[in-house]
Image (cartoon, rainbow, N blue to C red; front, side, top):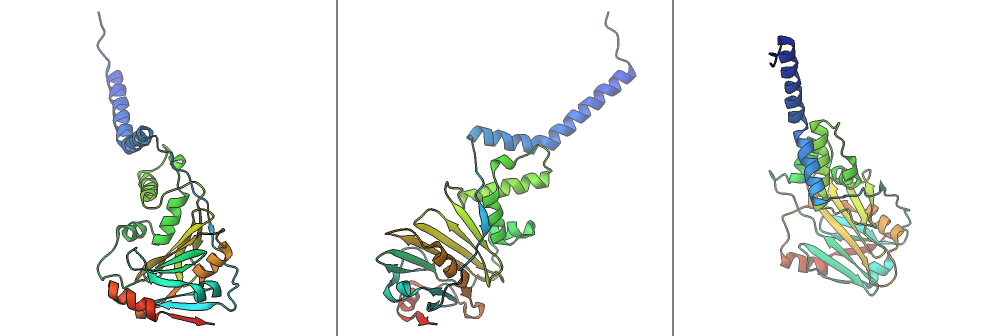
Length: 257
């Protein structure tokens, strides 16, 4: 004959069930995330991130001005480059026999528009460029069952940035936070790199891409170009039309320092 459970036994059972329910509730997001990662077989590696250190060897270089954006170029790029409107949106190409520079022409960010990246960075008390750098540092190996829900959400957000900023093998990232602009130099390989920047007032953003058709990129030269970039917010206007870009190709200012 089975004995009826005593009150202490009932209380203990209820207590254990309560703990299990609470644990299940607390770790439900962790379990779901772990399931998704396992199901997809996702392995997102961390990308090396370091500070951009420009040598500052720009004596005799030219200053190039495209609307609100200005940056320095070595003579072989400034004097020999063929200028044209690139296929990419709002972009001008400076092409030499050895390589190509593509420059996004910035414009005033419309009032009231706050991209998702800016919103996410604000929530985490980071600037957009800092958030992207954090995303490159993030890895699936960072996941811990002991994470708080806030830490888990941050971890998920950083890894989801990888859809926009893929963690590709061989990539290195260098940060520029103490200059007139905030930016990230992403070195993809020996012949390709890109510099994404944002004004500190969040009024404009843009990029410069570097590619070589012969030989390797001169990375010290690339770093000096990135570090020299500035954006005059007072000269920002509306998004340029194709006609505006064509005119800018002919009227851009390139002056030797």
